Length: 290
Length: 310
Image (cartoon, rainbow over all chains, first blue to last red; front, side, top):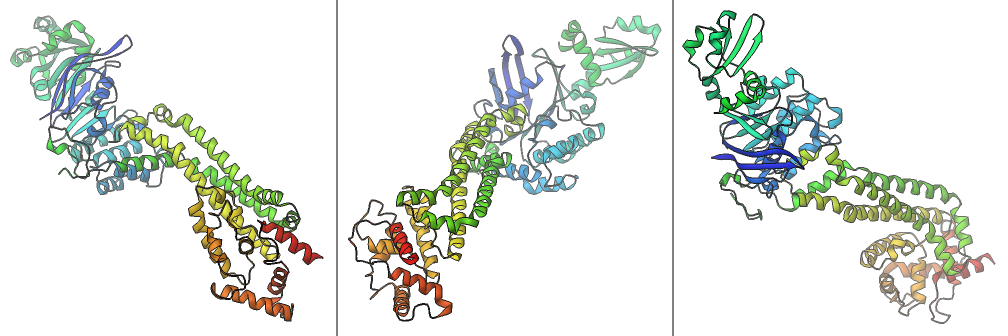
């Protein structure tokens, strides 16, 4: 079943084009990372998917038009923008009451048990909680909702590394199953690398790379080339080259592993390396997409 | 899975898209209004504080109340009424003004505040339609705040009435009757007020040997008046012949007994001294002697007082 399907999605703010004909197809049960530099259109894309902004083009989320049917869509979609969006005046107990009151799929007992694992008190106000606790609270609320699509927009912004790790761990272990879909944007790419099943690079309103993790792992190879082999390695048309201490690191797309092994140490690149390769060199990026 | 209460047509291609426990249309509205009250506690706290201030001010002013009331009772009926009503009006005005100010500040921030602090992203992540949100926000100044103000005004005025009646009664002056509360003069509230008046007149029936001035006036004035709705309850009482020969149970007979005893042994029984004195006082009021023209009860009080003072 298709969770999100977009064709020719466009959105402009005045003369600034935020989304320039995005085609997207996300199947059920995937964890998709939407990765792009600042101002690439990530948040605009998420807003369109969540029905927070009007758009041009065709977009269906869980079979619904998000702009026209946001309130119905939100029964099946959860959304964590970032840690700052929980209203600061709200008490934890109020948040539980309210979500239980308006959300038909909210399991209050589950939220209570998730909160019991944290140090959050029922009577505290959101403004009295630390940033990490607010993230825990929001995640507890969201994880207690039996939703089909969870959208996370920079969910761990400003959190320390322990909270970030904990956040993704609990998301993966306690929440994700094969019938759910998670869409996440983040700049901390290397932290979500092991979590994702699909990656999507977006730049200047366009999708520049769309891969599953299996494709990513089988296609891209990184070689730490010794100085004397650099010329030979360059002849194999790497998509990116960077200098590190004691040699060059070259990134190859669909290269022969045996051939590369002769040139130096072959290893699997990180998403961050591929991101830099694709975003850093626009001409080469086209090659990476084809 | 689709329950009848789920009025919204489900167009989802996926059957699981239908909510298992369908939320009725009013529930998001109810919770949206509640969250406005959670967020803006000043909506009810500020009028309550003003009510408390007004009540405590009134409490302090009861120190000289019996004296002032005696002076007021010597005035003409219109001035009398105005003087007795003034503190009640004042309290109502203050509470209304506070509610208005609070409402203005609420409206200034209602739709903008959550955009500014970005919590709109949280609210929009929940299955509440924009229409519900806007309606709930509109209902605060249009419905909820007036209701809160009305309830607080009624409670405050009732407290003031009880307070002044208690003080006046302790000092042997008859207090204001519920219909002197401005809120009871609204025609719209007439039915509800009739209930309240009924309750309060029952209360006063239970009070030992109290002279109900409202009853005396109604007995004297049998002609239909323009505000007969207000006197509906009293009119029922007033259908009893003034000699108390039948009907109306113990209340009238006791009054009659008092009167008889009062004439034979005026003020002889110490524990009944006050009530006897009062019934004797009432005895001097010409009951049906005068013309049946509309006669405000306050005239009677004044006449009775001047006679008793003379």
